[in-house]
Length: 123
Length: 339
Image 1: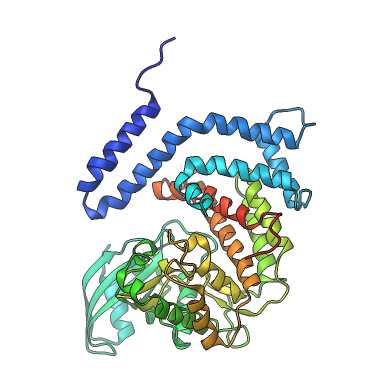
Image 2: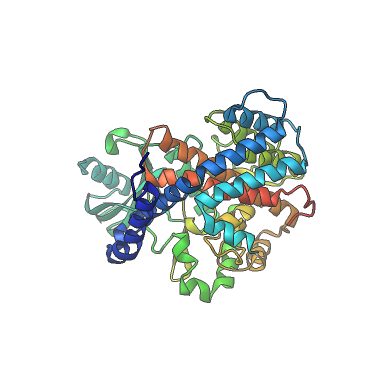
């Protein structure tokens, strides 16, 4: 089966490049903040296109590791279980739960703000 | 909107023969409140002559935890009386027929109150340490208002402590939102287990950061946005000001992204006579990230739920990942040594 080319991700990335390199420098100051927000939103969307499936699979795998006896692969349900268990102290000082949370947040941050992650991990 | 009624209100309050509004313009910023710049000329009365004023009113979409304009006016007036550098509050209006919403009038102060700009401002950089001492001293003046010296009918004493009441409030906020937030819950559990037992209650501004301080050529001209002020331990404002999430990218400048903690602490202690406990300050820096994270989730949800479609709100929702990241780094179970 054919897939249209260029892909949606490619289109987004090309549009961002045009926006940042050619449109933004010639934009009146009053509209610059809006344009920066648009470009940031598009960049997040492009990274999410690239990494969302990997993120979902990894997060699900982590949750199943914490709850091996749960029969259903329901992400929302497992995530809610984890939240409740943390709230009521079941995982106080648990290194394994902490690692799961840190890994999942790192993957999300790679999409939402990779610059913050790089700056944070370099220190 | 016709301005005749507003003009009449201003004339009456200033006991003027008449007043002319020569400029009326919405100011930038303000997701929760709206500010309008007013240039006014009074003929006769208490303020005869030309004045630059601000009318502050609610934005159409109100956040439930913020105070009303009448309450904010009362806080601003008490801060002004305590010698805090704030725009002088003049009059409050609770008659909705004048401007459709309640509002108050204060003097307009000059300067810039945008964190991203101020942390790069040459005048700020040149005198950062002196400015921080002054800002520490100003915070101490705000904190001179205590439950023993003042009572505000709309502020309750936190029970049993500001930290535990905060944790309970955040959990209630999360429970009203769709979805689950395990990393936030992790941070909340840490805040619950590490809540300070010793509390010194003072009036906290609760949004004391560079983005809410009007600076003109490196000089403080007004502390703005009193809508979240409340009783809390004095370390809460110090933690909020120094929290990494409020350094506007200047991570190594730990006091607000403009300079050293030492200068800020020195200015605070000189005026207040209080010492600053690093363990408590660290606790309130974790709390600051939590509070901002919960607000970010709520802002994102305002967009997602269709209540108010806005790219600004949507992007604020995506800030949550970096706040959770910092929360987790600060609450690593391997790192029992805080700070």
